[in-house]
Every structure is written in C-alpha cells, then in structure tokens.
Image (cartoon, rainbow, N blue to C red; front, side):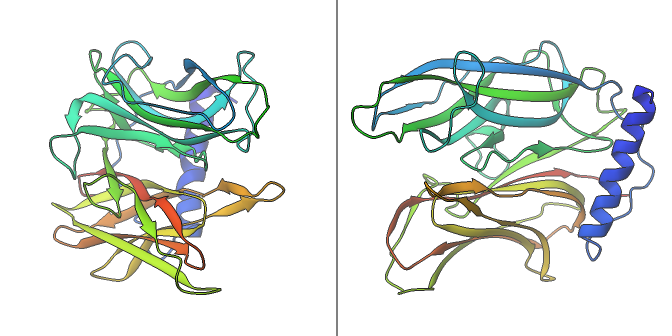
Length: 309
C-alpha cells in the first residue's frame, strides 16, 4: 500500500472510530485541507538519571529538551522510562510520576503567565494522537522545556538504577497553517492554576468516592480532536464534559496492575466534538475516598481547533 493511501485509510479509520465510539457528539469532517504530508517518527531521550531506593528526582528546565529540527506539525507523542539499552523500566521499580513538555512559543491557554504545557504523561503512558488534517504547529526556533518527577519504588538494599525519559514523536515537516488545521493545547487541571496537587481526605468509608471539578469557558466555536487524562494511584476516572448540554466528551477510566498494584492505563479519546462559544466545560476527577491520598492530581490535556466546519 502506498504511503499516501495508507495515511488516507488511517484518517478514515480514526474518523470512523469517532463515529462508532462517540456517535452522539461526533461532528462530520467537512472541507478539510489535505494535511501536512509525510509523517516522520523520531525517538528522543533525556537524562541520564540515577536513583537508589526511595530516591526522587525533579526538574523543570525552561529549554534544552531535544526535539525535531525545523518547523513541523506534531501528530503524536508517547513517553516511557528506559535504561541505557532502551529497555523499558518496570513502573513498580521507577515510577514516572509525571513529565510535561513546555514551549517558549506560547503562554498557557488557561493560566496566562506560564509557558504552554502541550504534551505529557504520567504512570498511565497514554499516547497522544492528533489525527487527520489537525496538527500542533511547532516553529523552527521554539524551545522546549519540561517539568518532570521520577521516584524509585524499589526496597532498601536494591542497587541504584540509571534511567532515561524517552519520547517517541510523530510529526509532519510539511505541515503549516494553510494545509493543516492548527490545534491549541488546553491543560485542564481540577485544581485550577495552582500547584496541581490536592489531598483526598479518605474519610468516606469503604466504597466512597471523592470528587473534584473545575470548569473553563470556551472563548469561541471550535472542534475538540483529542483528550487524555492523568490521575494518581487511587484514581477511579476523569471526565471532560460540556456542562451546558451535559454532553460527555471523554471519560478516562483508570485500570490497575496487580502484584504489585499500580496504576496501569487511562485510555485517551480520539474526538471530533463541537466546542460551543460561551459553554462551560468541566473536568472532574474521582478518587477512592476510603483512605487518605496525598498529592492527588486530576488533569485533562485536550486539543482544540478554533474553527467551524
């Protein structure tokens, strides 16, 4: 199959998936530009980091994170922790608490004065996917920074480990604002623009649930094309919805690995949902409230094209 035809079928399958999974909210794709052409894949590493049992490493460089050269349209991103040989490090050994990429080119859409947070992940390792004619445009001179936190979970006496943050990017060097629909990244935090963490009291008894929400107002009409959530251990699910209509855009339900138990995955949502000017959009995280949880998080990263069909 030719590359052109393969990409066309990829777009069609993603659009069909939107129709099947989100039939009540999925908008048809109309009058779309051709997109940015050939998609390239490149893998980068940041590190090394050496941690011993119980050790933590945090950082927030404003620039210097490796990225593809030149201008391009970002299509997907997936993060992992690996050793020097590129072998993934088990999450119950070294925990990727979070890594979030920032850019010098834009301010945060919801928290002005901060660099825009445009891709990232935590323990859930959700792949970000910006499908079809949509792309997150990156300038040739844009500097990428990051906010990261790693934690060693191994017992005392375990040898120290050296790890790298690895990220695999898919991008289109030919993408621009004419042949693609540029998206904006919305880092929606249930704690608003504060420190992102909050405590779950754990006073509700067996089976109880703690809920925390925050809303933002759509500045104009547009289309949401992807949303993915981030929770910590004890999280149940996180939901993005249009509070004016009650329409649920995305619900990410946490699944867990057992023996040892740790958060395993939170599926993201490929979307083509209408965002209506003036409507409040809420993000709601739910946690097990049967025991206290310190430093919980509830974040949805959503990409929106501000245009109409």
